[in-house]
Length: 262
Image (tube, rainbow, N blue to C red; front, side, top):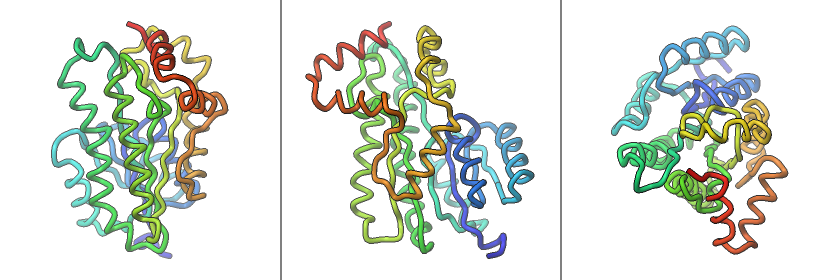
């Protein structure tokens, strides 16, 4: 297969954290990459390194996906360059911490746009492109927060519950097609999420429980290629999600509120 016809994997939020680690995992598997994030400088550095180390194509597009119309621009870029896409990794997202009524509405709505709407838009726009491949994959990155309500992370946890539910339904609808859909829901990962969300007070405690991005990315890619429907990495995270299913929700929410208290 020539470089021109090699399938590509499109990764959102590719410049750092889990997205960046997934890029290296897929490059190691021989996939060319379409790298999407806001930082032109970080994307160029990543693209150059991946091409040197793995000899794959790694074009990038620096764009703020939270801006209306951005997913369409990404799709137009793909079509203009005739990139054959076999994998869509919906990884971009962020959290906002604090009492809902006291937090910026603009920030909350921006988070909803990126965490939910962009996942839906890109999936809808790329399914026809993915269907052109003999085997294709959609990997949606959710969170263990999807399995419970989290006071002070109220909207974030709700967006991740949306991603989980959407992935389950989309997987069912595409079951007889060439596209396998997987939801991967990690717990705390050492990606700087806590700092961006404003959770600096928990950063030191989180260091004791955080998984590393490379470790998480390896598990995510394995789950995707194994065509798993839903994967939670880490024994502690699995136990936590199981507890959410059997314990009273009021107790779970009170415990979460104590951990993430203002």
